Image (tube, rainbow, N blue to C red):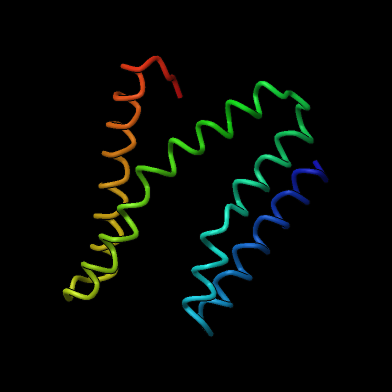
Length: 116
């Protein structure tokens, strides 16, 4: 149980640090957020919990394939905000776009024998 609490606190601290930096410098906050810190942290926790190389390799590969369809969200949201859309609408549209692209990516990869 203590380990779960430690994982939660470390992960939360990372998110808080990024949001605080972004308040002062949006570009620096974005740079830090764009680093695969959460992915690396997730891999560290997964390795610590399982020490399963095959599972970790599958996780890393799936993470790559899920990052690709999430990228357009980071173009749609600023476009909508700059066009006057409310934040929640822009965020919702970005999430819906990403979910749709996740489904499309999963279907396309399945045709090539890659399962996520």
